[in-house]
Image (cartoon, rainbow, N blue to C red; front, side, top):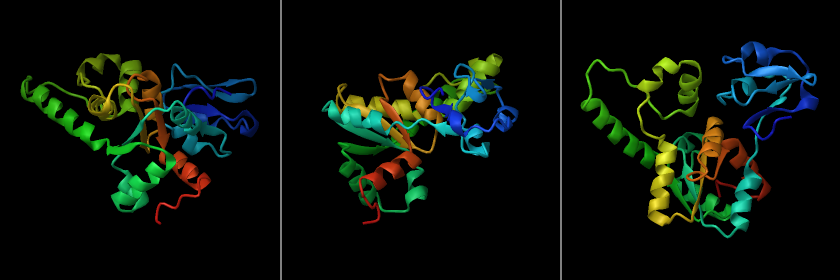
Length: 224
């Protein structure tokens, strides 16, 4: 079991059906010790194998304890919240903020602020370039990793700007101090890989599923 990587196999649940191997678009899964093993250096953390695994053996690393350790270090921990939370929870922002603060977070800010900065910089680059030049957004870590690893001839077309999540984390640190911790919360599994690679900006990344589990464990009803 490689549970240090964002996507891993729960060995006891793997039925050797090979579906994840057949379905993996980047061939990042192999059979090892009689179970399907995720090859971290090839994986782009798209999460497709998690969706197609019929036995639920493919899992996403749970980082709730990692976030709790930040609290134990007496750090002020801020949330970079993906804008898609609105469609997932369907509550007013005050309730969302209240629920997250009850978990122990110091403050909550939307990742969209980072996206706004990225859009401004992208517009500058595009407007000052050759009109026939092709640009690829840096917003999605899955796409960026896929191009750099498997389509390197297009890597030069990726805009030289860090993702909205990383940009937003930088804004939070600039506003509240370099000693704060930042936790991204959103729907994207690949943000875990991005935070692993940029610990200086994002200390941990949680999915909405993890947030739901945490809220349930703490008996916090977000609709109250």
